[in-house]
Image (tube, rainbow, N blue to C red; front, side):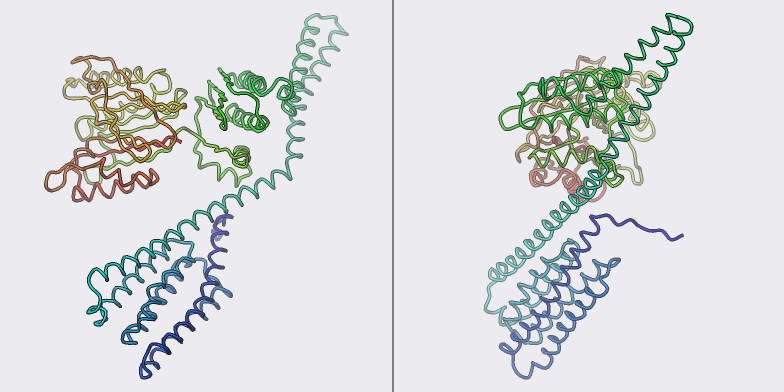
Amino acid sequence: MAATTAVTAKDAVFYQYGVRVQRLRNWFRLIFAVLLALAVTADTSVRDRPDLFALVAAEVLLGTAGLVLWYRRPPRAHFVLVVDVWGVLDVLIVLLLQQLSHGSYLLLLFLFFLPVFSAFNLRREPTAVTLVCNAAALLVAILSDPLLRTRMSGLDLVVVFTAHLLLCSVVLAITTTKRSLTRRIADLLDARSALLTDVMTAEERERRTLAEVLHDETLQTLLAARHDLEEYTDSGDRSALDRLDTALTSVARSLRRATYELHPAVLETAGLASALESLTRVAAERGKLSAQCTVSCPSTVHDRLLYSVARELIANVVRHAQASRLQVELTGRPGRLLLTVTDDGKGFDPAVLRSGLAGGHIGVASHRVRVEAAGGDPRLGLVNLAALYIAAQEDAQIGGDVYECLDTPFGARLLIGDVRGKGLAAVEASAALLTSFREAAHTEETISAVASRLEAGVQRYVANCGIDYPECFATALIVEILPHGTARIVHCGHPAALMISDGHIRVIEPTSAGLPLGLSEFGDDRFVPDEFGFARGDRLLLCTDGVSECRDREGLFYPLPERLSGWTEQPITAVIDALHVDLLRHCGGRLQDDAAVLAVERV
């Protein structure tokens, strides 16, 4: 059986746009060939024209072949390769025209502005290939012209070539922007298709759900009640009458709940606060949760939307999260409302929303669209993350550096640590440290208590292994990011964290630096956290000493804050990628110690 690959709406949008663009580009290629012919006629000698017109004919042939290809059989499997080849051939033809014309400045001008054609592309790869070839061709054309070399100073050449590179950069930026916008359009088309399907099946689905509730709960209970009534009529048994009363009470409760879910009258009569409290209370009863609801804002025009979003999120907590705690909070100030639904369940990867959307599970996705349509900003989770681990030992995948980030009932909690030593002993100690953190982060109310649990875990590991305390310890940073714009950090003898806020970088210096984990008997075993503001868009970068103490061949340390200052506008994943490359370049490709980096951004 032949394997097939599903083509998503996004793939189709990109492909269709690319085909239309290449068709348009080939029409412009023919117009460009006409301009080339006029330039050859106006700015070249008669004896050179046969060869030049042959090249112009090649450009016409290239455009014609492109039109035939993109109209009759547009390539799909080798799309990028075909676009690359056509773009490079354009550059080659214009370069040959300029060279064979013995210094035509009109043709040189065409070569200068040729990158504009690449702005049609939607993919960065063919654009970049064509632009690199174009810049190289312009440089060759300028340097091979003896008249230009004598008339233009070195500064003139630098200015001309820099202007060309700027043009290339603008073209590449246009391509990247168009790709981003097209991706957004494709996502919206995916959502639109799913929403239309959902609208068409909504009535049937609601009827089926109501029928299931009536059959599985109400009807079955009524049948049992009828049986109890018959039993009481026949025997006069009082216990049957008690069971009948219980069954009828259950039926009333079930019908009341179904009616409430169909139309929450409390929203109109008592307002949003009471409706959310009632919704939370019902969820707590159904899911056997410890639930809390806090509302600190007046009613607004968005009450129905807020209620609908809260109902969807709370229903997901009850059905899927396997949680024991639920917290619903609605706060507001002029021009801004913030609805937060948190739980201590197993969580989920936000990336699954797209696959769920394709599978027809559009609850959260449809509410995301509704919130965005109302001018809101729906977000899942507190932070975005990116991480990097580089082992100093070649081919090693693990070592003494560890990091972890967990979504807990108390906020997002992070750990980065460096266990003393190398080899298997360090790996085992690292595993013990991570295990302690994963257990403590979900149960301890403060990160001071988490740090104490880690201290006890390290000491317990040492005791079980029979290792002296000074020979086994771990430096660490423990961070807690709270939902309301603050964060706390506990320092345990580890390199300080760096915070990036509004493009500025500062070091989060500890007011009370603690000892490394495992050494509490040599000093104060209290772990005092530092609290600081951590607003939306702020970033933290945590790293081990494999980064901060990385040296180049001259013994100079890696200038991490200085390098970060040049990456503040990039996504954190791009920051980590750039840091990886730059760090290895600084040390000559081989680190002296394991290195771990954890970047976190408040969203």
